[in-house]
Amino acid sequence: MLPSTEFALLRRLSLEQANGRAPSMVAAVVRDGEVAWWGARGTVEGDAPDDDTQYRLGSITKSLVAALVMRLRDEGRLDLNDPLDKHVPGTSFGASTVGQLLSHTGGLTAESPGSWWERTAGGDWATLEASLARNALKNRPGSRFHYSNVGYGVLGELIARHRGTDWLTALNREVLEPLDMSRTTPHPRGRHARGWAVHPFADLLLPEPSPDAGAMAPAGQLWSTVRDLARWTSFVGGDTADVLSPDTVAEMRAVATVDDADTWTSGYGLGLQVLRHQGKRLAGHTGSMPGFLACSLVDESTGTGALTFANATTGPAILGLVVDLIAIADEHEPNLPAEWRPSEVDRALLTLTGLWHWGPTPYHLRLLPGGMLSLAPVSGMGRASRFRPVAEDEWLGLDGYYAGETLRVGRDADGTPRHLDLATFIFTRTPYDPAAPIPGGVDPEGWRTA
Image (cartoon, rainbow, N blue to C red):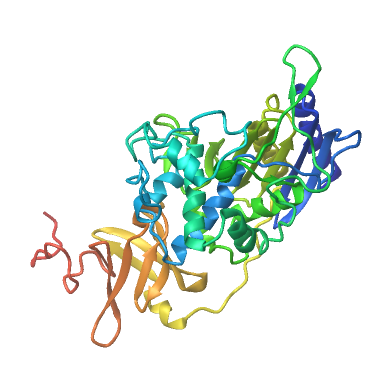
């Protein structure tokens, strides 16, 4: 990046490390699947940390676990609406669905019973399940957002039962290795930062423990580096390397529930936090464990992402820092749009393009890459959606009002497209075409002055 941009980014990081009193901090900006800038402040064992120094991910671990669950879904091994009891039978909260556990709406208790799991060694699944035999549900499943570390411990067990191995082995094989995230591990290896608590009223440090969390490990066990977390940040932005389809990751980024009132600013998708900030929509996750803070976010519209690690229990405002790093990068060096170039399309689909009408309202249908369609009101106001092909003359809605709905083409005997059937709404070339199957029919006298 330009020297002026790099200085602005480093200054922002420096302010957070100093004001937040972090023993060390590292941060990076990610663009086009690469680290565009990274910086460090403070020291680790007397030297500045680098982009291969390990810190704890904390709850960013949950996003990686969610990717494994979505792989199971895409393979047809489960449905997000399945009750947990279908896959992990016998628990006291088996009515909560897989999707609810992913989005923290399953009603489960936030923390596992007993000693605080983040600072004490954890037991196996049988021990965790036994501790949840009573009073595990704190809210009616589906009724509200209630962040649950326990829910992700449960999802780790679900993964283990489907894969016939522990969740971490599955994660290494199916996610970390394909993404070349070799420095993401359950315990530190090689150079790593030690976790510290900073005294609130003096410049003193106290070491924090980092035990193995056992069955709760899927909620926050992992350690990682700037390089590896940068790769994961790109993944969340859509650079998925076939670990998941980009459409599935977009589904994970979609808001499943919100964490505040009518005008929401923060919400949760499927294993990902979602934020709205000054017109931007950001997705990723924060993380904290005793002695560590972490955050990774990406702007899905610009593709710019940022991340940070600190080895302090509290102090630095990591979410605000990452949001600011993205803003600085995009303000100082906005991405240029990709050059437009003509591309080959299925010529047979050209007959579908152009003007259509829903009742009297005109719409434009356009071709998108990959045989996809865009259907949007000519005025720019109203229900617009994109559609991907699923069969001959059949497309599935991807977003907007028609997400998940099916668009079908009705043709004349000679094959000419006559109408579009979209979730029972009939679109015609001319308003209320009497030759099309308009619901309720068309007045035989047609259009008139009164």
